[in-house]
Image 1 (cartoon, helix red, strand yellow):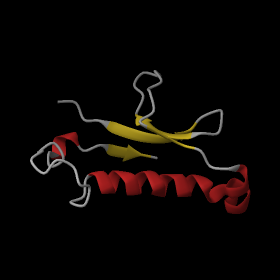
Image 2 (cartoon, rainbow, N blue to C red; image 1 turned 90 degrees about the vertical axis):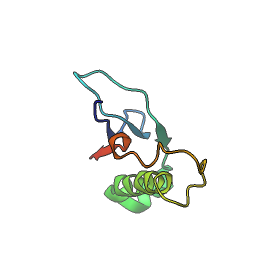
Image 3 (cartoon, rainbow, N blue to C red; image 1 turned 45 degrees about the horizontal axis):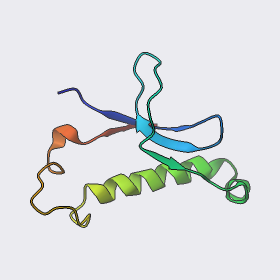
Length: 88
């Protein structure tokens, strides 16, 4: 099966999204969207994107942790083949 890569990008409208990495220039549908307020952007200066990356990473870590609280019988989270790779 083909590996899935994820990317974190800032869209033209200012939203920061986590989405499957695009192939051949095609745009993909975001899996999650993060909106950072203008006040927060102003306070963090150029570090607001780092904040977004950490937030997405924390979410992914949670999903693949033992604390996620998903169906105990599910084996889909244990399969390394399906774990996403992150591009920055």
